[in-house]
Structure formats: structure tokens, C-alpha cells
Amino acid sequence: MNENLILIECKDNVGLVAIISELMAKHNLNITAMREFVDQDKNTFFARIECAGLLDDETGLQLELQKILPLESKITINPKKEKKVAVLVTKEYHCLGDILVRDTFKTLGGHVCMVAGNYDVLKPFTDRFGIPFHHVSHDNKSKQQFEQELIQLLEDYNPDYIVLAKFMRILSPEFVARFEHKIINIHHSFLPAFIGANPYRQAYDRGVKVIGATAHFVTNDLDEGPIIVQQTTPVNHTFKASDMVKAGKEVEKSVLSKALQLVFQDRVFITGNKTIIFE
Figure 1 (tube, rainbow, N blue to C red):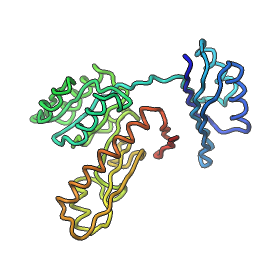
Figure 2: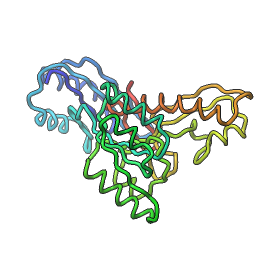
Figure 3: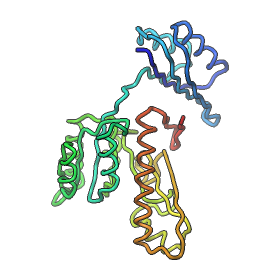
Figure 4: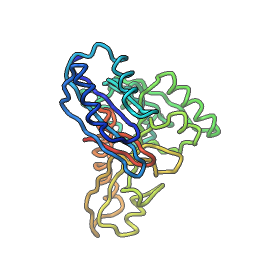
């Protein structure tokens, strides 16, 4: 492999960049790009390193990095380039449509392995792209039963990430824990404003002058997981709530697309309830 990617998260220490660079040179790897950051509050060092050169012993490099870095360091060498993605939907098509078009033209940065919905409204649309669609109804089922069916389906496909593309169901702590740091949601609000349902109606009633969208990792706290990307667009007194919804959908597609590209390119580190992003 002539292009290599190395991700490091460890306790901060003096001289980390120097010893990492020396080890790369020892393995005849030329560092073509290196981004690093120290979270001083948590005394944690993060690095994303791109290297050129033939790496014929990834295991050996991994062991040597573990020796020179602080204990309990997290090291990933050459993560899978094309991520396997499962998409969960309800009835709205705009985010799903953008994802499937990007998947078709290989600009998503991952591959959509399946789409699942708690309604079957988007099945005919998904079928046009040759992507499997699974209808997992929540009707006449307990939340636990519904989620267990969904979990079984997801585990059959074993995706790297799960994208909630306007999936209008609140997931249980047990579900979130099963796929920790793998679930990405698009929320139709510039968080932390207007958490929960009907944010555009909330924004309209408040008379805001900007609306936005937020892509974030899902945690047990509703709409409060680590933020990946946010974006806003201006509105004014002439906008009805329906106008805000229309404008917001365009922002949602843009924000989700950007977030997925960053995550799929391994540019996002999670630290507590925040993210560090090497663009």
C-alpha cells in the first residue's frame, strides 16, 4: 500500500510529534499531511497522519507505536476506506435522496448497503437505486419489540455507520449502546436551540432571523450528542412556517452530506460530548 492513514488518540506528552515522525521515517514512510490537536482539559493528544510509502508490516508498526506512545493509546492504521452504511428513514425523502444519488455517483465516501423504514412509503423510491429496502413497522409492537427487529436486521448487514435520515423515532439507551458512536443523526435545528419535535414551528413562533441544521452522533440525551457539522440560512418576517421548512430541508441535506464525508474519511474524533475534526 503506497498511501497510508494513521489515527492516534493518547495521553499528551512532550515530544510525541517528534517520536512519531522518527518512527515513520524508520519505516520509510513519508508524512504527506499531519494534523494534531491537544485537548488540554483532558490532557489528550489526537493526530491524523497521511503517509506515502510501502507499508508491508502494519502489525509491526502498530506494536512499535504502542511501545513509544503512552499506555492505553488508541491506534488505527489504514481503516477501511469505503464505509458500509445503513440508512434509517420514516417518510421524508430529501436526505435519503441526496444520500442515494451520492452513493450512485461514488461521491458519498461510503456505500449504502440497505435502507430500513418504519413506514414503506420510501420503498419504491429506494428500489430505483437497486438498494434493499426493509419495512420494519412499529405498529402494534412495543418499543422493545420494534427495536429488536431493527437490531437483528442491522446486525445481519453489519454496517460501519447508521444514518438517521429523518428517522422520526426516539431510540432507547439500549439501542444506542449497541451501536455506540456509529449512529449519525440530522436534526432540523441549529442546536442547542429548539430541541425535539417541530423545531421550525418553534423557530417561527420565536421570530428567529436564522434557521439551521445540525448533524451529530446519537447519545442517550435527545439531540445533544457530539456535533459534527452545523449550518444556518437567513430568514425574515415574510417567511411562514412552511417556508422555513422548505429552506431548512436544503440546509439539512448540505449539513448531513458534509458530516458523512468527514466521518467516512476518518477526520472526526469524539472526545466526551464534543468532536475534534481535521478538515
